[in-house]
Image 1: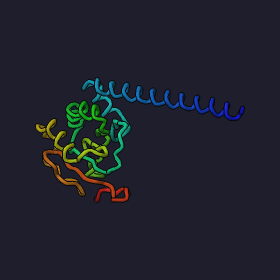
Image 2 (image 1 turned 90 degrees about the horizontal axis):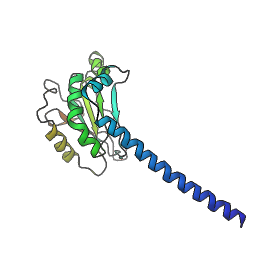
Image 3 (image 1 turned 90 degrees about the vertical axis):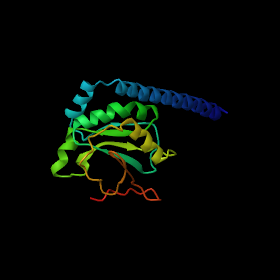
Image 4 (image 1 turned 45 degrees about the vertical axis):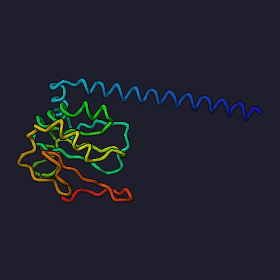
Amino acid sequence: MAFYTVLSSFFTFFCIFIWWLIQNTVYLYHTKTEKQRDMNTETLNRRLTKTSRYDMNVHAPTNTDNGYKISIQGKTVADSIFLYERLSSYLMSNDIPFKVATINRFSLRNTNKEQSFKAMTIYCPNGMDIMSLCEDVYSLIIDYKGWQDIKTPTSYEHYAGGLFFRNDRTESGKYIPAQQ
């Protein structure tokens, strides 16, 4: 009988701990999201130029293992800032993960030309139609000009403007690298 009492107490503690963990994870995610939503152009410029990373990632609690992603082409940090400012609210409010290129990605121009033009990558959540996502994104940046004079990336299909999309997974879920 004592064993069952201990087991019951442990189970109760475990359930309370899991509930607390979930509540705090959601709180931390939304706190981070609010900070990123409120980021002004000056702060964003600093984050994209004074870094050792190639991208500024914005995570979301969404599963994206269907493999679809959108690449928006660009040439400069100004293009990344334009895209972030136009798209971040929509993407964050719909729990769509994405990343924005930093100055380091654009500096790859001499070594990895195709990668150096990916100003923003958007990962399509499972259950969302890639074409609907493309249309939503395109409607928010219809006047974007930073993609002009950039070739279509290998393995991608052109949607409109600077939007290109591809599926980087096989039917079994194995990753397919872009052809170089």
